[in-house]
Amino acid sequence: MNARLPASALNPTAALERIGTQWDTDIVPRLSEYIAVPAKSPGFDADWAAHGFIDRVVRDAAHWVEAQKVPGLRLEVVRLAGRTPVIFFEIDATRGEASGQTVVMYGHLDKQPEFTGWRADLGPWTPKYEDGKLYGRGGADDGYAVYAAIAAVQALKSQDVPHPRIVGLIETSEESGSPDLLPYIDALRARLGDVGLVVCLDSGAGNYDQLWLTTSLRGMASGTLKVEVLSEGVHSGDASGLVPSSFRILRQVLDRLEDSATGRLLPASFHCEVPAERIAQAQTTAAILGDDLFKRFPWVHYDCGGREQSVLPMTSDPVDALLARTWHPTLSVTGAEGLPPLRDAGNVLRPYTAFKLSLRLPPLVDAVSAVRELKHLLEDNAPYQARVTFHSEGGATGWNAPDAAPWFAQALDAASQAHFGAPCGHIGQGGTIPLMNQLSEGFPTAQMMVCGVLGPRSNAHGPNEFLHVPYAKRLTAAVAEVIARMP
Image (tube, rainbow, N blue to C red):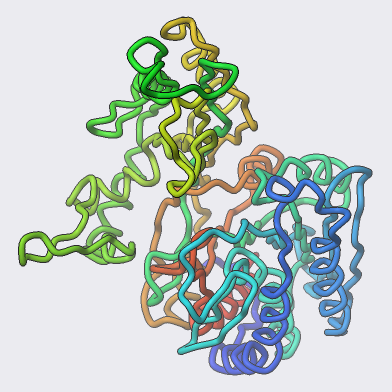
């Protein structure tokens, strides 16, 4: 045990009981109110300021935090001109012999758009609490974070457990790639202090049976690829065979980027070597999760000549599956334009086709370089001299966690054993959290507790998104335990 760990220990049973009661009586009702507000991220709501939904969820969360009357807490809603607001709170240290380092607790309040396919009795803005799951857009990603952060601090306060200085940073542009975050970090840098631990509550879990530490995050490059061949649509019988199809040209252009038979990204610069430590962790995690890695997704099942079949994953090996979704580049088409709904589709050769592309990049690949190469690859030497344009929406470089300090590794395992009865698991995530790379660069010695409630079937960004409340309670208690053990 690290001799510098504080002498006062958190009673885990009492902490979890207090946190569980607070979740049931206060946090779940507040999150239900939050879910009902369509606070879509600016990337999906250009008129976010006029609509006022982001301001509303920020105001509601800030009022709740202030109503908790946490000793030593000061809160400010910071607003930079033309940018989404940020909640910034700070709590004085109570550990007299503390090193002066700060804990930063991060989350966000903006949301993804509605999406389709919700269960008949559910909806993105219609909260429903059922069997320990709180359904609705944004509860798990990531509205709960500010409430869980304060609940963890209150658990420490309730037992008079000394703690370091704690700062909260709750943003509202994360789902748009956090374009507003870096200016706020620059503006608040002096007030962040000497950051020794970052608790990011915006990640996922391999299962609901133990604490999970995120060890890596993929980067992202996104934008719209558009192919134009005509100034207006024409009769397909008259033109096809002479006028090239914009859809076929788009397919050809995408073939430069991706092997359509395997899904492998072709440019070598979009790949990187996977660190040996991450491969070893993937092997350990694969042994824990096994087939659950594949069962977590809602595969299509169908009848095939009297025999039920389902869609197959791209690999059946659990280790390969973990690395494929965390350390390999992948391309997804997430939207389309120029294609009429089926009911309105006549015999017309369309003037253009446009796809929204989402390219996930390995953690060690520079996003700025990838965006530049992507634009060059897609636009140059277009078939038939069609007008091909790629309008980038920017990119975010991924993140690979620093080595865990001995105290941090011990604290994670102790917290997981205390509240789950199992050791801490390690898992990479395929998503992107721009803040983590920025904080790692700004505070290279800080430990990074990247964790969250997005476990199997929680379906962030998709239909039927839910927050697993029993897991959230234990995760909140585990966060309190780690902070209590910080040197």
